[in-house]
Length: 213
Ligand code: SF4
Image (cartoon, rainbow, N blue to C red; front, top):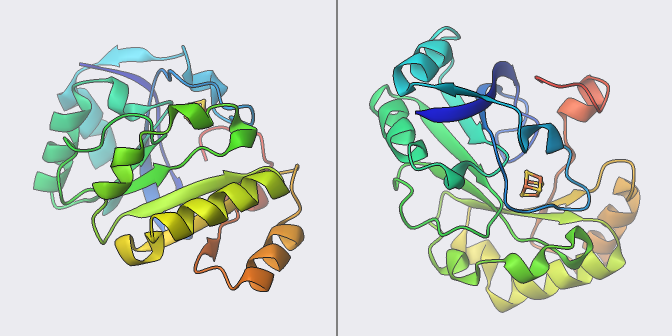
């Protein structure tokens, strides 16, 4: 059983797969409280559903790309059989995780998008640094950047862990409506950052607070 906040079909707004149609499975609950969190409705809202029921819902969309997100999806033990069963159906499975829970049990074929929390989130002391040693070449690492201090923190971590050589992409995502993408772009260009600017595409397609997109 899983506690599921929502299952929906939309345009992938983040990661190197941004722009692709994708089915999202958003699981309920998170043990962090990032200052800029845009999915706080997933902290408590949700319904208990069987794996079979969740899979049947995902199957309705006939979409090859599926993302499991939250909340924090690794809080629920049945997320592991869910990922296995989606892979067995031939889906490309992405997992978006806050980066504070170990990723070692995640099936190897799953593309993990692993956050590193910056100081502006208020949760930087919760980072599980060993996750950066468990990355596979197809995984991606995401930093949400609120201000210059967050950017400098991210720049330091990217260099210290040599993240560009350990992952498929390093994503720098400005907090929507707080940090101008232009400013972050200029900082990245000035430093020649081996990273990718990530704008949350869905917030440009639909009003930023729209749910289920
Ligand atoms: S980890 Fe994700 S869901 Fe949890 S508080 Fe942070 S942004 Fe929100």
